[in-house]
Image 1: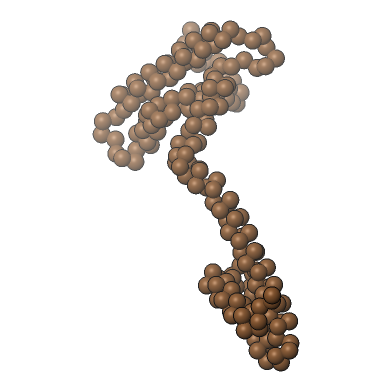
Image 2: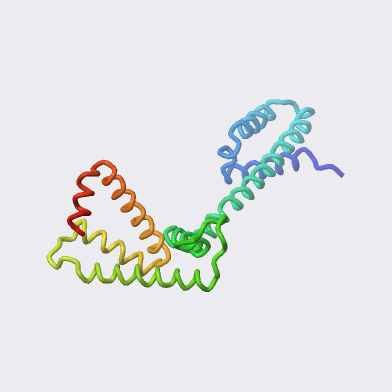
Length: 207
């Protein structure tokens, strides 16, 4: 048994009010404008035509309802990775953990894949010695810091940064010191290349 025109009109009105309260016009502005236009024109039609327009309007409202449900599902799926990333820790912690993971996979002084593989225990022992040496050097540098340096003194800022690396992520400190050593070696090589006479004289004076 089909609904009477009055019941159909009431159902359409209730569904339309519910979608309006859920801000359907923002989800699909064009579709919602079409629905409102159809509802306005329905009132001006004869009683014989209104049941047909009621069914058409109800179909459009149900389509809009399904569209909004799909949009809500997509929104929840998009928000889920963000919530997981928030609960897993701060961005800095995630970055440090990732750096530590890469450092453990390729520690300081690792040989290239083409060379003969090194004994695992020897490699771990060498890496541990390097780690102890770096931490000891940083501790000594902090202990020898100037006493009267201001809060924005560049020397003190560098020492504080190294101290934080040592306390928060020692593995990243080891990798960072390797980068610094490499840059110093490149800088020395560049200076020696541009001033061969001075470097030779300095070498003779040292002897």
